Length: 492
Image (cartoon, rainbow, N blue to C red):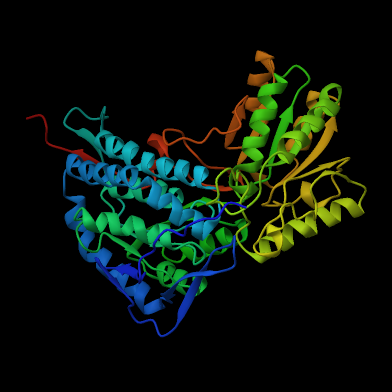
């Protein structure tokens, strides 16, 4: 097995509050663990509710002056940090691989993806346009202006530890808002590296805070109880999203919620099978399947079912599992032991209910499973809708494949879920492309595209997959209030 060299980490990682790195009021610590080895990477002070309150107080002080800067000044800040991210891509990617586990090539891609949100919103902030509206009276004029909502907060997940921050922070800063970030305690290092870069380019103190702690409910409560925080953006589970939405009601906070998904991946008999396989592997195995838009249920039309499952198993079986820092590794560990346990439970449930294991399962591959949180690429066939893999997000490298007979049948199957984040379908029939675009109840559709996410597109779901959109011109609207001014006395 290839040996790896652990990149140097900062001797001390601390929360970033009010423009300085500090242990704050912490009286305890927590460890950040490498999921590939189980080894401790660093130890951080465990932030308290008082630290979160201090971050909010600093944001309240800093935000008005920032909102009064020009769009060009705000754009310059975002572009400078994006440039630093590109310049430091190797270091940032290695830190991400250490704390989150994804292979180094994927981590590099995420750093570039994360920077793209700063680049996009640096320009989109220049296009916060108002309107003039025809008045119903000749002596009046109606003007519409857009202004920053004020202080904002973000609670971000571990699976994209950089991009899920920049997708929120980019539009917030571009719109003139301050932001307090609560990253996952499993992957706080990427968040703190982003804070470092903003600090180095001279972002005004207090505009960005990164509060790292393990008691997420207590830290979130401070955010939700403070009426001065006008908006919160959350990426995570539907269960937690519902709690935050209820809490937001008391202070009438604006909310953006990007929640769970259960993505179908549909392959019709007329599809380009080579492209369908390539995209299926990319969509399923990106981040080891630990993404909210990962394909969960593979529906394959009966005439190409056997060929598809054979080729899918061959491709997934050829992927190398191991430490993401090792050359040639394409499958890293899952984030923690609980994630492995969930995958095992889903696979065991499917097998008990009649599914067959075409690839993977409990096989440990190269012996790495005993040392870290690994689960091999797995393909299940003869899957039916009584199984957990068709009802819950597996959040792991398991492809559950189900045959179908007709278009109407597969649309019904695909929509039979409370979730509606992403769906994928592959066909050469142009009419079907448009029919499914209208019939599938999802916020993101990949028509012959398994990786549709990009900074300029509106990312978000319907049904219990969330509210609001991130990225694109729609993403910055989430951080703006619309105000109209009725001007009287125009005519003498």
